Length: 495
Image (cartoon, rainbow, N blue to C red; front, top):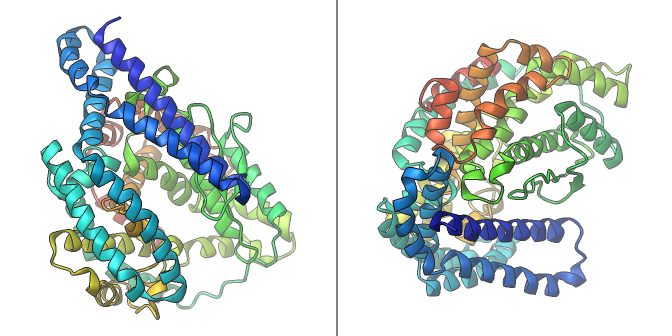
């Protein structure tokens, strides 16, 4: 067995351990009963410890060095796999174990404190944990930066989004921050005279589930490989080749929420499902980072399924199921519901224009917290000032302001940018795809997603991690990532 083959075997086991942890996560959030939590936690902790032990195995460093001599005999995918192994090993060994233990302990305490603080709109009770977490994340970032030769914030982003750097984010976010507030005001003025007929109320979970499963089947979803369940926070199972399980959440008074959440997670699941099966459990066979992953959910949900073409198919289906004679289910009224823009203070409920402004604010705050220019104690005041400037409203309390996201209590710095970078990627890819094949939009108008996936699958999904995310975007769209396609998309749709 060659050294490279030893590495393949080792990282294949790591991939399977990660898959087992994903399945445990699904079980914990979907079917596990509260009384099973203690035993489940013991199993999950043991699996995580085993994964960490194998990921930092000191033999890996020697294997990676020896494998360099075998590179001339490796094919393109194997060479890319070796590069991914090196990156993962550097991340795994960059931070001392003692610091990882401290973060795990603090995250457990801080997340509990965050839940109580958010429920009580009391930032003061959470502030001590926030101060400690910022200090700890600075240490974390310093170690990772030294190991990877990157700036501290870039090192944090690289863990979630390999190859994404602050210079690229600054270029995309800078243009969005300049132009989106202007577009927001223009669109709000335009929509001020809209009189929307309500899409009914009291839609049962079962009726919504039937609608969602119908749309999933139209996308080509493989129910023999997956299933739809309900959870508090929707998610798609990741890292388990061939397993397409997703979850969603329904609101009786908002038909759009559950359907769009389902479509969003379906986009994630197709990316995972279409990854090349011959590289299952190998680093090169994994999805290419959080931003590209998010682009695949947003491209399906926001670009394709909020289009006038798809609503032309959807509206009659809603009328058939919920009120054939109800004018609320006419195409124009349904489309306006999907295109309605609001000054929403809550990120996860925000529309296509306001959502990026939320993410840009969090990016600005994370940079300022890490470099010390924003003391953690001053977070609420800074948040309220900036959200008023960019969205035009001030949060009435901390729960609807700086305490609304769990990420910082878990030490998750450097992840927020992927949400809006994903939106920019989605718009650029969708613009290219629909220009290259008019059958995509024509297909959406009759519920046919065949042309859509005939473009997306070879251009994005099947690339896996064989290329950098920049290379995947440039090969697919013919240009480097830019904010311009997203701005064109938003202006054409809403302006």
